[in-house]
Amino acid sequence: MNKRNRKLRNLQRMHGLSLKVHLTNIRGLHSNLIPVHHHLETAKPHLLLLTETQITTPADTSYLHYPGYILEHNFRPRAGVCFFVRDDICCKRLRNLEDPSCSSVWVLVDTGIEQIVYVGVYRSHSGDEETTRLFQHLSEAADVAQQRYPTAQIVFLGDFNAHHEQWLFPYQKTDHAGREAYKFALSMKAG
Image 1 (cartoon, rainbow, N blue to C red):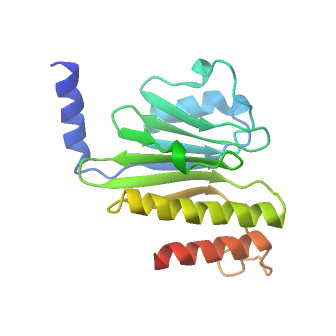
Image 2 (tube, rainbow, N blue to C red):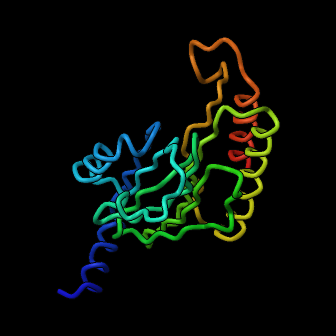
């Protein structure tokens, strides 16, 4: 069976499957690369999002790659995110929706039946102004994504470092990031 037919057969099988999307705050990709590769080998998720990768983009990223997966990344010191996407998944990076000052990666996954925009986000413990700007950018970029891909679902994943009394027991206080995240979530639900 040639490669094109095999890929088509895999795509057809995806129609009836749920996507396995895994997320973890890795707190340093270099020190956890072997466990990450082991997870890819054993769990075989369709997408793996890692937040807080805490590395600068190396000149050669090949040592980070894993066979059967495509690596989409936005590496930053003390922040950063990356997706490992199985290479049998139809996936497109949406760089035009990314803000260079934010730790986020936007990808469009097309299963043949549905489209899903996955947004991997890491918000470091930055100030209120940066937090407000991040959520404003995410909201504006989500509006653009909905215009460009009107039938697509949009899924935001990540570590927002936000605390809100309504969703994080036993926190008794809501911080600025929690208020912004809450407003953002409500605006996405309304849209």
